[in-house]
Length: 352
Image (cartoon, rainbow, N blue to C red; front, side, top):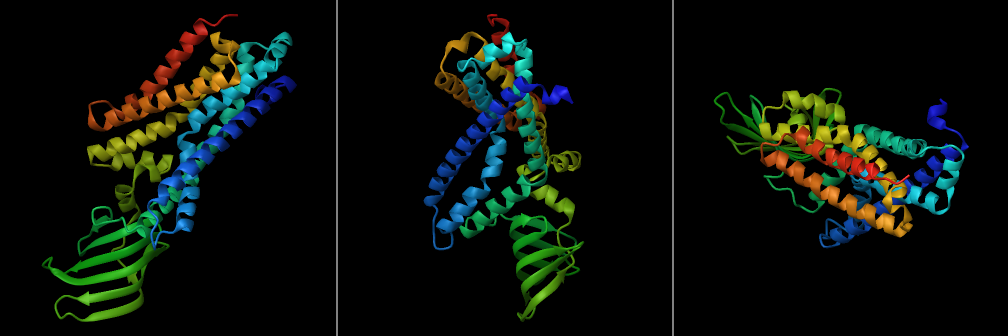
């Protein structure tokens, strides 16, 4: 247990790094919120008001924070260890017998805690919230067209719906029922459908009989041909899936393009902790290595430049995986190898 908690010196370093990571996360989340709500102001309308833009900006923050978690850790460790170095606490820790490896391990422990919280959030909390906020926004802005909605087909009907805030709720459904000759028999329109157990229920339903033009209205009706769990796996964006769902869907997917999307998101989420820990060690190298004489502001600027450069390279290789022969795993591994090589190079020439 002591290897994780450490002594008073380790706890002081971990506490300082955790505080710095938290402040950096708060700063990045605040900036992201400001930029998001500013970008939403141009889309305000009668149906999509300022309160809607505010709610969307707030609900999109968890995914943005999770997506930037690696770089938050990089800058947070850079600030935390840099502050300790300026205050002389790093030198004091060395005098008291702490090696650079001990100090780095103490700075990695709070990062591991943050990463565990990030992984748990991406598994149970973030996917549903992101899906709900994004599709609610698009619906209120009336920006979901026939090309943007979802189409499902069964033996007796073809269904279209505009939005699915989660796997148990569907908005604005149109169902085209077919007869035995696969000709249009009825058109059903419903405001929403909700899943209760294994069955779907349509609400505020209008049924138009194509043959005689008769219209009927029902407050509620069972939807026998409603989408199944596997249908949602085929139509939703991979970022709406947890890590376990991504793993399950890869083997079931037939489309090579969508399989690459699923694999890309799966490997990115799986290897993110390794990427973040390597960035933490890279940040520490700027404190112990040639850059140790720089001020905290210079270290932060260096960290931001590195984070921005790595972010661009990461997005570039991910895009290449979708349009070229580059596999999703390799496209995710290349930025990790770049960070590993850069960290090894800096530590190799570190002055003792």
